[in-house]
Structures are given as C-alpha cells and as structure tokens.
Amino acid sequence: MQRQRPLAEWTRNHGGEHPPASGTKIMTLSISRAPHPTRHLLLLEILQLLRPFWKAILGATVAGAVGGSAMAWLLSIINTSLSSSVSVAGLVGFGLLAVLSLAGQALAGVGNSMIGQKIVARLRQQICRRILSAPLATVENAKAHRLLAVLNNDVEKVAEFAHHFAGYATALTVVLGCLAYLFLLSPAVLAFALGLVALGAWLNHVAMSVWVVRFEEARKLEDTLQKHYRSIIEGAKELRLNRTRRRLLELQKIIPLTERIAGLNSRAFAIFWAADTLSIALLLGMIGAILAARPYLGIGNDAITGFIIVMLFAKGPVEELAGALPVFSQAQVAFKRISALSIEFRTAAPREEACSAQAPIFLRDIALRGIHHSRFPGEPTGFALDIPSLTIARGEVVFIVGGNGSGKTTLIKLLLGLYEPASGTVLLDGRSVTAEGLEAYRQLFSAVFAEYHLFEDIVAAPGALERATAWLHRLDLAHLVDLEAGRFSTVDLSTGQRKRLALLHAILEDRDILVFDEWAADQDPGYRNLFYTTILPELRGAGRTVIVVSHDDRYFDTADRVVHMEHGRIATIVPGHQVRVAEPRHLFVP
Ligand SMILES: Nc1ncnc2c1ncn2[C@@H]1O[C@H](COP(=O)(O)OP(=O)(O)OP(=O)(O)O)[C@@H](O)[C@H]1O
Image (cartoon, rainbow, N blue to C red; front, side):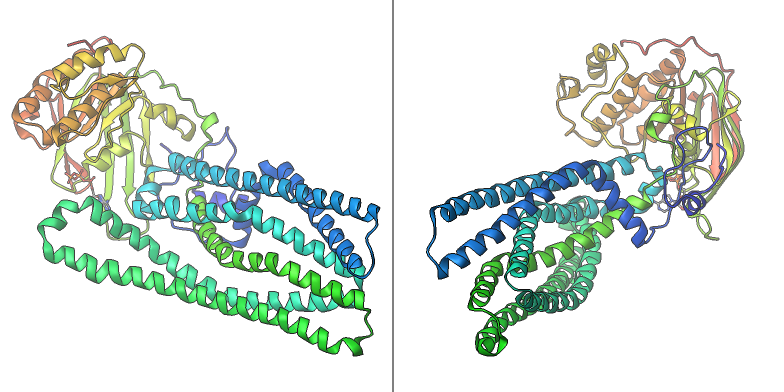
C-alpha cells in the first residue's frame, strides 16, 4: 500500500469535502485526532442534512405562515367584534379563517414532525455509515464508550428536539401572525411589543449562554458515564467477586458522576426557569404599564384591547417557544458532538461505489514491503512495527508466533489491509494495493480475530449453506445450534463453542485466504488437535492460504513456515516443508 496524501492535507485544501470518487490514490488515514467542529463545518453538516428535505421544509413553512396569518386576522375580527355587532359575513369570515388557520397549523405540524423524524433517521444512518466506512484505526482510537454515547445519547437529544419541533414551529408562526396583526392595529403598539420581545430575547440569550456551558460540561461527563456503564455490564463477573472494586466503582465513580451531571443540568434548568419567569413578569408588567399609561399614550381603545388580547393569546406560544430553548440547547450540544464524530469519521477513503466489491484473482502471493507502522504516529514512545519484507505464497500455511505484544495481531491487520502503514506497500501478486483496490483486496480474506464478534446471520458463498449442517455436526454444535432462514438459531454458547461457530462462519465464506488469531486458545485438547492436524491440512488441500497466529508450540511443525515476531520485528522465519499448491475447490463436506 502506498500512502499518498494525508487526510489533514486533503481536508485543508478541499474544505473538508470528500475526495474525488476515482482516479485518485488517496489512502485512508489510520489515526485521526478528534477535530473541533468549526462553525463552517457545523453549518456544512446541517445543510447537508437538510438539503434532501428542502421542498418539504418550504411547504411546511408556507403552510405555517398561512396558518399564523389567518390566526392574526382572526384576532382582528375578534377585536373589532368586541366593540361592534358581528355581521353574518363577519361570522362566515371568522369560520373560514378559523379553518384556514387550523389547517395551516396542522399541515405545518405534520410536515415538520415528518421532516424532524426523517432528519433523525438520516443522522443515525449517516453516523453508522461513517463508522462503517472509517479506517479501523479511527474506530479503535475513538473508543467504544464515546461512540456509544454519541449513538445513544446525542442522537436521542436531537430526536427529542425533532419530536417537538412541529409544536415549536407552529407556536412561532402564531407569534409572528400576532405581531403582524399588531402592526395593522397600530405601529406604536407593535413597537411596544417588539421592544418586549427584544428584551425577552436578550434575557433568554444571556441565560442561554450560561446554561449551554453547563449542558456542555454535563455532556462531556456522559462519555465517562458510558464507560462505567460498560464496566458494570461487561465486568459483571469480576465486580461480583471483588466487593471493594464494586463499591469503589459505585461510590467513588458512578454516584459522584451522576450527581455532578444532575447538578449541572439542574443549574442549567434553574437559570432557564429564572429567565422564563422574568420574561412572563415583563409581559405582565408591560400590559400593566400600558393600562396605566393609556390616557397619556394617545392610542385608541381598539389598539389597546387588541394589544392585550394578542399578548394574552400569544403568551401560550411564547412560553412554549421559551420552553424549547433548553431542549434546543441540549440538542445543539448533542449535534456538535455528533458533528465532531462525523467529521472525525469523514474519511478520505474512496466512496463505496468507486470500490469494487469483487475479490481480485489471487494467483501467486501477498507481500509486505518496507512496512513501518506505528500505533500512535508522532509519539516517540509506543509500539512500532517494522517489516522490511514478508511474502506469503498461495497455498501456504504460515504461523505467526512470538511473545505477547510482539506485534502478531498488528502484522495480520496490516496484511489484511485493515491498518494503513505509515510507509511501505502491500502487494498482491507483485502489484501494490491501491486505495481503490483495498476494499476488493480485503474480500480475499476470512478471519477469526482473537477479539472477534460472532454474527448470527450467515453471509456465505453460494451453496455453502448446505455444508453448514454437516459442519455443525463436525464441530459438535448440531445439538445446540440450528440453521434458521440463513442464520444461526443462537450464538449463546460456551467460549470454545462460540469460537467454533466463528470458525464455521469463516469456512462458509469460502475465501482464498483464512486468518486465525489464536483460534485454538479456547479449545479443548481434542478440538485443538483437530484444528492443527486435520482442519489446517484440509484447508491447504483445498488450495487455501492460511495464516495462523499461535502460541501452541506443540503444533508449530504443522506449518509450512513459522514467522517469529519480537518487538515489532521479524526475528526469524523457519522454513517448513515444500509448499505444494493445491487446485482451489470448495471447502469440502466433512
Ligand atoms: N488496544 C490497544 N491500545 C494501545 N496499544 C495497543 C493496543 N493493542 C495493542 N497495542 C500495542 O501494540 C503492540 C502490539 O500488539 P499486538 O496485539 O499486535 O501484539 P500480539 O503479538 O498480537 O500480542 P498477544 O500475543 O498478546 O495477542 C502492543 O505491544 C501494544 O503496545
């Protein structure tokens, strides 16, 4: 693999855009620091999210505006009817305007709630897509608890805002309609009302700038809380065995942290309620002041009663809008977090459609040349892997061995094209694997990692499902697991049994190269023996190339070659017997 240009440089030159889909050789970036989403990038993210819905947004806005204006007109009819008798035409007008106002608001409400929900769905899809297409190192470095906090917590906050958005939008159109009516009534009265609105807005703005800081602080702590959640679920066994650890986690971590988050949120809401009460006090004060100053203002009675009707009518929607502010602030904080993650995961990898999903033809060998890889680039200490040259021939069974932390797993992740090296190349049949070819290159492999995930669905080569039942018998799983509509009936099994099911997944995929990272470590002696002395030779016999990370020195002689790793380097390669490449065929039915 050849590193062409780092993502940071690309992003600098192209304003954070995706690189062109094809014709470029830009590789994915293995390590990316969490970027701070600038206003520009945030705006870009928001616009990208809204773009597909602009017609619906426009329609809902027009419906809302019509509904709000009709409401204002309605208020004018009510006001004039208070001082004079109502004609039949006036009553008909009242009815029509009421229908128009309600229809406009209902349409705006339905439209906005649909748009809100679609935006949330899109947001969820976009984050998942970005995580799915990001370089493995970015996912690993982002840490699971942080990703989960964004996926669960932040998206929910945005969803909550989206859920209420229709109500807010309707309230806003009613308030705007009321202001329009005040203008018709008397520009002087409108000026009063606008002064009031401006004062209220300023008050809320000041309060918001204080409470947003609290919300942001609380949100930061939620990441750590997610980590503790994982500890209490994943560490359930250990925590039950160690009372001191359990008490420490609960008393010194979870309780203080949750209290702190609650305290920050409560203070934020207290500020909101103070600002809200002050705004209502302002409104009532203004009505009182107008009533008191009526004789001196030179404004007609109509205008005064109209003003009071409008103010009292608009109080409800105004309160609703004010109540939306903390929800909006929380959604804003959450959206910033989502965007930061989204931008961090916006990879310079070629777009999906530009990549071939077809595995290339594998004729001769895969190789690493001049590879240097460091887990945390730029840091002088820390693990680094240096592989000047390593070639694995088709049909070979190669063991990668060495002490803990010597770099075996890192080496296979480089061979699989999962990590991008800082320098050096991965070669397939002598040709370097480019960024565009990487996706296809990875389809050559099936792997069972030491830290693997067991999927229930079987995504197998055509015809492989028939072989699955036979393999379930062979691996002594048939009495526990069934095949149901292309999936395993259960994956809730013992550690060794789960690993055997993972092996079955790899075999059913029928790929050219199989990689097993300490597969036999959890197996009983019988299955360990079966793996090394029967399954590996069978795979070799079926023309497969097999790479095995192993600590089982008893079985090293079953390999064609043993690559010995030490401190991120190849210490020795012990040659085995002559490799005889078998004709590829489907993996057999046992
Ligand atoms: N999750 C991690 N976070 C930080 N550094 C890591 C992590 N995993 C591995 N490393 C670093 O990478 C080095 C190589 O790890 P690697 O997993 O490749 O070793 P290994 O030979 O497969 O070890 P083992 O036999 O224990 O599985 C380690 O020595 C460690 O410094």
